[in-house]
Amino acid sequence: MPFFAYRAVTPGGASSSGEVEAATRDEALAAVRRKGLSALEITPVAASTVSIRARIDGKARSAVTKTIGELAVLVGA
Image 1 (cartoon, rainbow, N blue to C red):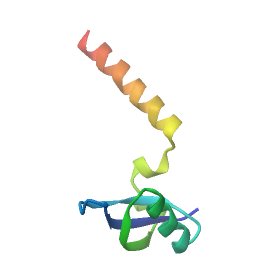
Image 2: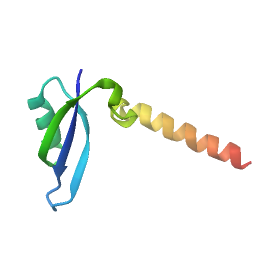
Image 3: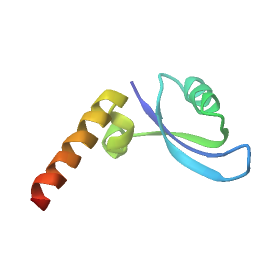
Image 4: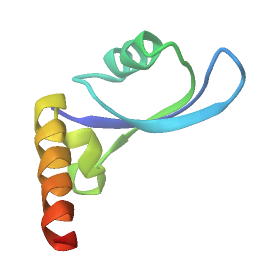
């Protein structure tokens, strides 16, 4: 599925940016709105330029975080 980069603003007016995975631009816009953001710009991006953070799901992100924490403990030992 393609990725889309977005620039948006929060309800408080702070700027936000990131990537969402969606089949179409309209679905990407809906995904940004579900985050509570108002989109200013949505553009398709090549998969090779998408950040690793956008490519991994919550479980994988938790596993990576836990592994890095354990490695930090070992390095400090």
